[in-house]
Amino acid sequence: MHVFLSFSALLFDMDGTLVDSTVVVERTWRRFARRHGIDASEVLADAHGRPTGETVLRFAPDGVDVARETATLVAEEVEDIEGVVQVPGAAEFLRRVPESRMAVVTSASRELAVRRMEAAGVPLPSVLVTADDISSGKPDPEGYLKAAELLGVPPSSTVVFEDAESGLLAAEAAGATPVVVGSHDRASAAGRIGIRDFHAISVAGFDEDERVGISFE
Image 1: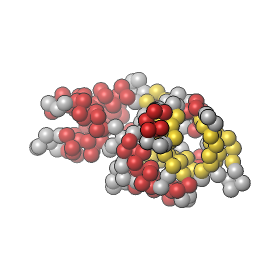
Image 2: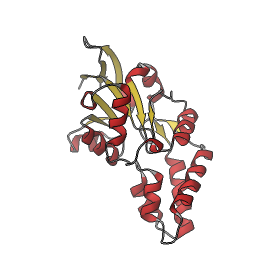
Image 3: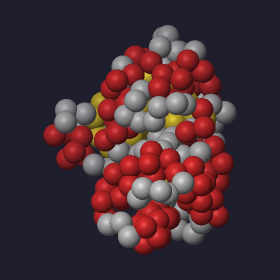
């Protein structure tokens, strides 16, 4: 099925959407779990798509300094880029989108986002909204609303590429059109658009209102 849609701007999550850092994320949270005698599988099931500090606050035992533990985890992730790669087609796709029409909205810190995007060879847009820039993480829509504001477009005229349910809920709460990256089945079950990766989508030009046209295969 061929689908063409146009939007004022394209907004992207980072981890799992543009950058595949699964191996690093798992290494980091498994170390955290071992340090505190926590079930790593429970932590990993909850951590994806959420700011590090929120996950630490939820799972750290009583008495743990949440701010210090969060800083430790972020520092570990910044240093550990082994195995960080782009989601197939992500870099090529972003190079075809005008920089004034796109933003990255991530639950990572700014330092970590820049580090991972560079490691994966994915272009970094000038509008980057990170955990450092917001007070409430996904599924709260604050990050996507802020990105739309910075780009000067209505949130309802944006499309959001996400892989995590918390991010998809944030996109919907912002009034954006969500696109699930990585799972056709999950997208279809929820009535959402889904793509396997960025080889399944292309920039198809601009419409009469100068909106970015994207074509889904």
